[in-house]
Image (tube, one colour):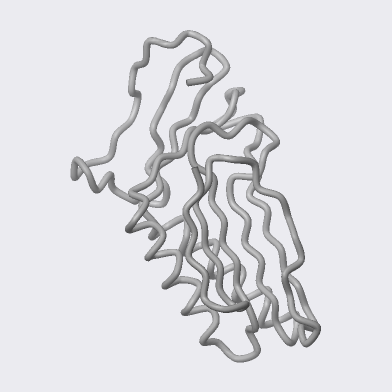
Length: 166
């Protein structure tokens, strides 16, 4: 599954359940290409994990990713913005979030990229469940974000799959 929104060559946002691969999509006028790869790390709160499971309210998530990209594009010297976020199970070492900002100069590119990442993590309705190596699963409440479906944070969700993979 992959859902995307595109506006010309300057804006592309997508949610997908397949691996994300980096590609340079900047015009020749760009003096800077800033790429952020959010990679699933081996440890969460000091405990080894198998990966992360991401779930989203797709329609709203795409619209919010589009708004974040548009806001970044409105800043001086930003030429294009790409935001791709994985859904489903993402193994340790795989990319969960890719943000690419093409800009005239590096300073504006770095600032825009940082803002995009912060806003994606704090504003977009994408939820993260940690799948620990022990088989335990736990929904995380990133940066105070509340589960919009239930109106409260959710943690320590039990599951019946002992593999920790699904």
